Length: 299
Ligand code: GDP
Image (cartoon, rainbow, N blue to C red; front, side):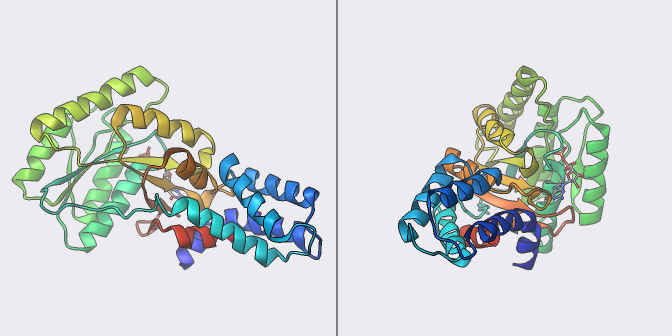
């Protein structure tokens, strides 16, 4: 809880400070509601959730005094209602061995770090994890994954620089099978500058994975950087179309006052949200739960 509230403190401060400024000892009128609307939109909660919150606050107390705590409670309730359907734990079917994750997202969104955090979690549960360095274009990304692999005791399958990522996916599944691994996490490149190429590459990875095992990838995780704001909505659409995303992880919520973007994404796309990243360390990954997130951002 502390890590969560700490991680979300910039967003919650922006919201709760706004709410306190607007509502301290003041009657609720149209102007106050408009000011509240600005605060929520600035935190990137999106038009849908914002207007429902405004309606709920208005209904509760129009033309009467309303305390900031009451506004925050209504806010938390409404946000929780949006998030409840999408807050879903990441399930691993243990009969599928290795359980194969394809991890996608634009460069810099936190894919490699998230893979390391997930690997750390599963390693601590005694699971055998293999990592595949599918971002074959960036030597630094491959090195970073190798460092994490060494630290966490997870084998890293990597090819030569510029090697074919789809071929690597095939090899990685084979290797994970040979070594009786429980989980395979495959990193990928995320060069959004060249969309056609990116699409072709991801499609090929999925196609080749299916040659190794028709049921794979079992899970396609899209990693989204919360600090990019509204762009994240577009990324969900693009990667959803190309890679058949099954769930989301949102990173860097500690680095933004606009963490409401997660609410906007939940509302717009309805994809399961599994984890949120609240820091750079290997333990800074929190299972995503609707109530805690809603309470944390309401301040
Ligand atoms: P990739 O290119 O998608 O693989 O992204 P990386 O995993 O290399 O991450 C890019 C940068 O974001 C690195 O400096 C990470 O330490 C940082 N990062 C990743 N997740 C988080 C997070 O939840 N919070 C913060 N503050 N930084 C993060």
